Image (cartoon, helix red, strand yellow):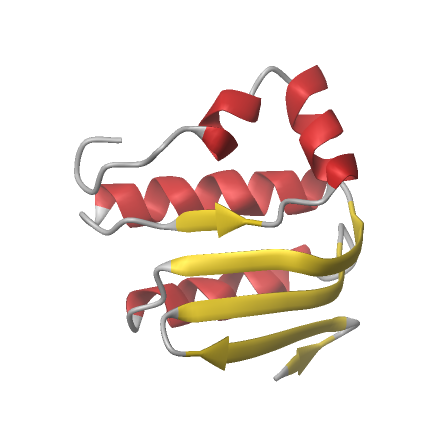
Length: 105
């Protein structure tokens, strides 16, 4: 599936994001990924992201919170360094890196 510069590829319980996730496509991407998460995705592989901004960070935090609230675990893997740096500056890196326990966060 392609969303304005962002490719979503599902394999098993993993959803791979490739391309850009930024202010220009974040709203549409958020909804698409959220639907996929509800269907059983347990891991987001972000290694293919080539461009990501604060809107991408907001999406990641919201997807993780939504999954946790629903009692599901969502693992984030291969977080790009620019997103890690943005999360660190925003003082939310621990929310991306911390092991997540379903239902308990």
